[in-house]
Picture 1 (cartoon, rainbow, N blue to C red):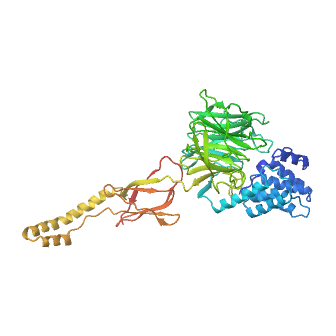
Picture 2 (tube, helix red, strand yellow; picture 1 turned 90 degrees about the horizontal axis):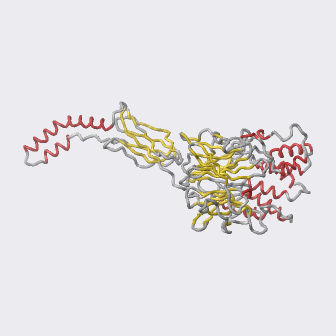
Picture 3 (cartoon, rainbow, N blue to C red; picture 1 turned 90 degrees about the vertical axis):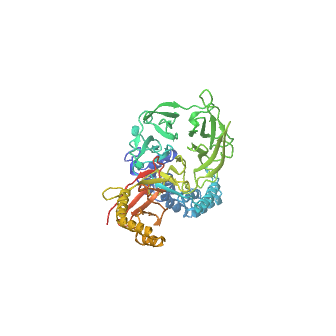
Length: 561
């Protein structure tokens, strides 16, 4: 993994001595980049101070760089005779987020045995439940292929919340980079986020571009989702002081997004809403906001319907089938109108937020059923908050911290291999080296055979005329007549992934055309005919993308030997 803290190394004060007050300030405002630098400096000056040692470990754990770096600092504290047992919780969390389930379980059990009052939002007992969920998930991984979206999309900065349209041709996402509008660093140490977009062209994502000042500003902009036909997008906006929070819909006009519409919901303080999604038919909205249940500080999911006057009606909380005592957030209506996705720290999460799919039905209200963890390795023991699907549910995009990334959160493409792939048709005609159709060649060959057969047919007719018994004539014809040539062009397709032959394909006799239908993959295709050299196409790659045009034209030339 490419690690780059240098991008964030500019602290609020240049060339100062490490300061405990400033270190605590960093923790208070979740500024773990500057906090890491501060605690490392303090620990260097006070090498026996376990608070500073804990601070270094805790900052590593919260950063999306390399969470395993937190473990040695927590272990060094725990291994002392006078160790603070509260550190067992952080050690367990570090083990869990780095997939060391056995050690995570041991650490959380030690924390519980210490008798410390557990005031964590996710208790140690809940963490143990997540560990058990993770063990089951690790033993039953789903069949997926997860690939980094590449350097054209990802940077050393956080790139997150990718959303695509249903054809996988257009993607929006958020980025917290030093090149963003205003180039401000927020109190949490990150640069303020802007919204970016890219188009899929010629088999790859094109250069990423930032939306104009109609959407982006020096303040905070984060995209929420993109409608399935990319006709509008949702952006969450917040000022630098965190006092003004708005939820804006931008509609597409021509090639740009403009005409902002601020969302309002009856009976809701919009500043309380953390995330939202609008149904494909535009009649329903689902959002996350603080729970209205007694003594609960978690986020719940709510829904409301669009009224005839064009305003959103009063919200209704989903029941306990959906909402748990933990956070539920990041709702998402997929292009498939019956599938709904959300993120939850409850249900059978394997750590932090997990993504869950469900069935959704709308009548006079919304009904969610069959809630299912989307599965490992899409879900990890870290936070997994958003996913965006193409129309056929085979292709999706997520963001997260994974091996081989470019520094912080990266965007990844997911192929759900148990969902049907789109087939590709390779078609064309076969010619000789002079670009004559093999049908013309075959006709010329058979015309020549007709010439050779002319005297044979003539003699056959004489024998047939002379003899009352046609046996002699038939025997002569059988032994001497030259048969017509057939096209007989063989097609051999090899899957280079397993070196096995695929399918049975032919070249049509009537016009020397062919069609080959293949799943995504890499193939070697060989055309051969007696008297001709082989035509070998050794690197035929069928992309596993949601492409509109699944046809490839490929004409074949066979050379005479």
